[in-house]
Amino acid sequence: MGIIEATGLRKTFAGEVPVEALKDIGLVIEEGEFVGIMGPSGSGKSTLLHMLALLDDPTTGQITVDGIDVLALSSIQKTSFRLHKLGYVFQEYALLPELNALENVYLPLMMLGAPAKDYGKAAMEMMETVGLGKRASHLVSQMSGGEQQRVAIARALVNHSKILFADEPCANLDTRNSEIVMKLLRQLCDERRQTIVMVTHEPEHRQYMDRVVWIKDGVMDHEEMCGQ
Image (cartoon, rainbow, N blue to C red; front, side, top):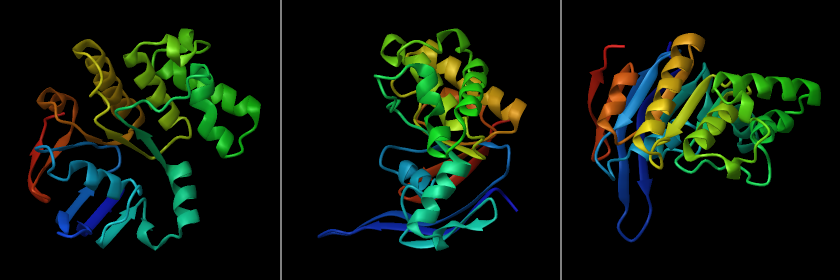
């Protein structure tokens, strides 16, 4: 059994003319796998990611994450599941500018009720993991875009998230910082067996991935093994 299993996923957005964004998607993602979701703009990539990440519900279909039928969970149960099991990184870093980097990283552990001495240590360890230990006390407004995205990755994983979902995390970064972030994600996958599901438009990102799922017009067009 994969850590994520989805079958028959459909998503229809209501309106005067209903739009079927996903059409009978099915896929399995294994634990420790780095999977990319790629395809043309408007193909349904982010919609699929949001379904798998419990940020939105499919119109029909089934999703199992870490052995749990997540669509059967209540809203409160889904919130708890996300806090304990999942991590998220997006185009916008979604960091709090009035806090320093370390404080941004330990916010999820505070929300989970961890003791201060524990969440401070765990957050510092994650800052070291992403190569920013010496920048931990800096306000995020004093950091580059690449550094802020690495802080966002540390925050997403500080609670030992089983799965990291990333929606175009390099979209606002230059080439050098994109490479730094992608190498970090590959390192996390290799060294921690971190499961990563990432939407991207960039063909060069495939070199860091194990597999790419190509989406076109809301359907799975094909899969590509990337040779990692």
